[in-house]
Length: 130
Image (tube, rainbow, N blue to C red; front, top):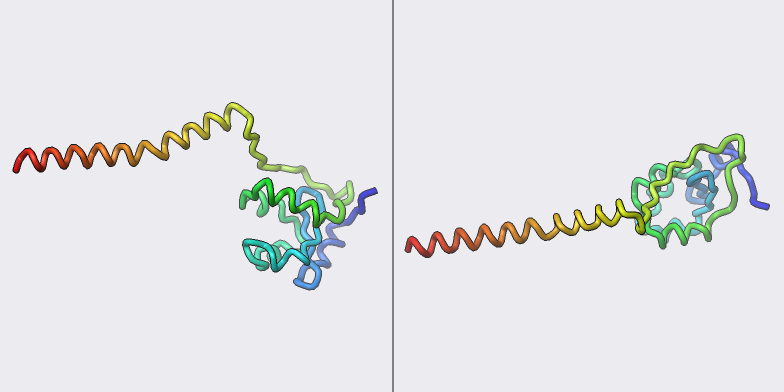
């Protein structure tokens, strides 16, 4: 059975001696991870003792980061205090993601090609007049 905690329980763990964070109704003890966090321990300490779901998703953590989180999970928020989960998970297999990726790919090369053409035209005009 998974341990259950209230937000009052989590709130007590809000410093670098004991750092608990709630992400999507799951409780994580990230105290041991403070020094390893790529963004620095300050980012975790800002969310210590609180629900850091929105901040976690806003950063756009990788699949590897989400996998690593499992190691630090110690329980869940009690049923009566759970909040609706609004994850921003990207489904890499959906058609909308593929069209978004191809649009992004298109935009990433259209500017350099346009600048190259413009430079070629200016070069030819300049040397034809001289």
